Amino acid sequence: MKLAKRMSTLNESLTIAISTRAKELKASGKDVLIFSAGEPDFDTPDVVKNAVITAMQKGCGKYTPVPGTKEVLEAICTKLKRDNNLSYTPAQVVTNVGAKQSIFNCLQALVDEGDEVIIPAPYWVSYPEIVGYCGGKSVIINTDESTGFKMTAEQLKAAITPRTKVLMINTVGNPCGGIYSRAELEAIGKVLEGTEIIVLSDEIYEKLSYDTEPTACASVSEDMFKRTVTINGLSKCAAMPGWRFGYMASPISELNAAVKKLQSQSTANIASIVQAGAIPALLGQGDEYIAMMKKNFIERRDYAVKAINAIDGLSVLSPAGAFYLFINCKKVDSDSMRFCTRLLDEKLVACVPGVGFGMDGYFRFSFACDLESIKKGCERIAQFVKSYKKD
Image 1 (tube, one colour):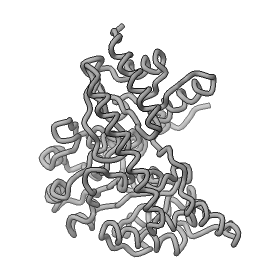
Image 2 (image 1 turned 90 degrees about the vertical axis):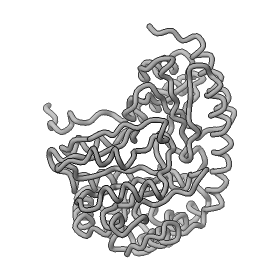
Image 3 (image 1 turned 120 degrees about the horizontal axis):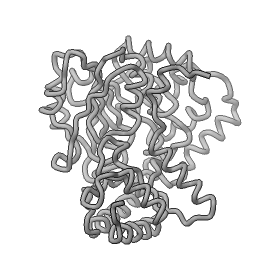
Image 4 (image 1 turned 135 degrees about the vertical axis):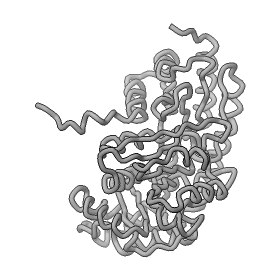
């Protein structure tokens, strides 16, 4: 059998691959510590579960409109106005099977063969994969610790060409937890003025911010609002990763129509019971639960940052949000795949190589697990680094 050529553009998600191998080792009886997961370790709040139970008892097993029910679309609009001061109508919102489908749908609708998509690195692993699948070209802007792994307006200006179609922004960022300030987003917006570049702003970790409140990209100016697709969901901030609830909001009517058409021929509506469960989370009824998660994440972050920085050869910036450390291991081994493979094989510690995020010489460590596991993991990493020898 011969597969379609477009399948050759895709690689398996490195984060999923590492987590899968680690879970297989754990299932075989190995004492594996898994720090590769991209999901909260907390269970879904009861307010969400109870909303689903009620909806099921009332009967909610029918198809819904492709973008979502009237109730869930209105709840998203309420959330965006309350939290981000963004005014959208339900017609400007589409629910998706997680924020990943929002990104996939938008890039499918926007990118033609040879179109360029600007992506700051480190980036979430799926961004360039989806761009390549669409026939586009990823233009990578490399960042570093000096800017908190954030792209500058000057870097953006230098990267724009006549083929630039889309800019990807991720704030709060994965894998490094960086948050663009309002001033930084305003400067980026100034660079984009007079262009037709669309901004896809991935804000999935928005409520998991610790040192500063994030600014919604679309909120910094009228021009940015008109060109920005706000992408969010509940996987991270409402502990609902397996529920697969994401959404996009945009004033660009042509794009919204195209996404709805594409989705009507793929998934159609997302699960009706998921939409019912999302409503209380969107309306802020789980905010106390989120505050509890944040308190725990801050305690874990602070411990892990101190422990990692105490290891000779490793260094890490304290992330402003999300639940990851992006650890510099260049002094030990600049080959992050080799480093992480050996770490898993020799010490049964699963982390994700930075090369998957577009930045070799680093690895991602998730602190979305209990503090005792983090302590054990940091001890094993310290032992591993102390005895590390390159082959």
